[in-house]
Length: 451
Length: 183
Image 1 (tube, rainbow over the protein chains, first blue to last red):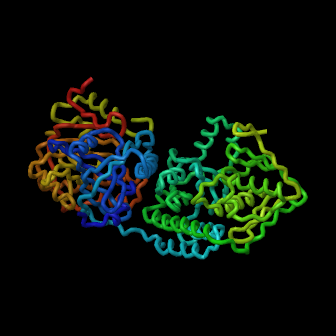
Image 2 (cartoon, rainbow over the protein chains, first blue to last red):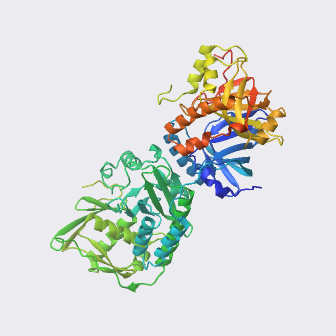
């Protein structure tokens, strides 16, 4: 039984202020300590970070009860939670959420090597009591997040295709939620993520790649839960993992290739929210900031609402019948008379234009298929439906958002200034625009070496 | 000091050995530490058999080694009742200067009214604590909020420490500091 709604005091559980913990041994001898993280799980549960096998741990296993004081940093009100131990989770979504947050807390306190999460100790909350009054008036944010999320969803509802949906979502996050740096990622079947577009970086970054489990974005996608960090942490930095993986796999040629992540150099706050559609992670909405602790629980709520809407809308738009209309995408000046050589590496469907990396994964496979089809038949007009059914793409039968792949591909081609374009000719309809001469080179097989 | 400028449990163990305290008393460096703006966290077992955590304001150490933790009644009611009724105490003192943390435990505790000069001393220690919280990156309003107390609401929780532990984060945390330390 809890007198206070745990949701109302989530702000006390963000690790900004340290929390206090007491456990007892079987003889009743207490043990008092500080604890870096009390994590809000749901209306009835919290989790404590298990970092060391110490007296607290032995007491918990022996007597299964704890008492915690958590402080709300916006008011400095203190709350005592009386807890009953339920279980310890050593992997999975809750563990990863807490591990990410802890790494930020540790880095903030200069204790990055000392704090390591061994487990998430889950407790049911027996009672909550306020033990010290609010001493501060919480600062007004000048922003009602619920209304902002609603406005963002309303903008998205007006989108007629995935292209417009991406713009509505990203522009809405900037305009209504006042998020300055935001990126949208699309998940491949193998867990890799590719950036579709972004705001606040000076370039879209379309095609930039995140490995499964890499940083907050890869972790959010792998676990299907929001991951939030309030302080910069080396454990969740991007780029290094990708390069190391490429080098260790002997893909030396690949290390310098790839589209660079447009992320901030020194972000202090990061949040990644999975976009769920039809029971799987279809992508990730990612935001970051130079500010410390920029994203609170309520920001996560708002982003989750927008991400949920994005997932639903994306799935709905995919089912629509083709409708003529669309936007012309002229080739850059100078393309008409030129030629372009396209190299295809079947191992990962990466494409190079005149030996410069363009894209890989499903988007790469799609473009290669279109170019091959055009070379064989002279066709330039295509539908997303035929792509979906084409066995050469080996797409999963369901939940494959081809419109999203095309948006990614189109934006990447535009940003790259390539002499190739995908032109929307209507909903579910598009045209491949190419210069005078396109030369296609299939490079090797699975064990391909670059030419 | 560790390489990051923070304390380590090994520092605490070494300092303890060097100080060679008489049994049942704290060495001078720990007496000083307790009164230097370290924040006391209190724990006991409540009347219902559950652990109970509370927060202290400051601490004073008597000539005879008695530790007096000054705590507010507000928010600590059931904890103070349990201590007055004979429950054991754990008091962990943690300093934001370097994260050094020392835990004291005792089975015999008395809860008495604060003395006239306690509030002045508590205010001095709290000012030091606030200063270090600011250096740690807390907002001024937050730092003041953490350490705010009502001088008229203080009581003194008094005990002779029976056990002393280093709780400083790191390898060795939780080690008991004994009069005759094990090799």
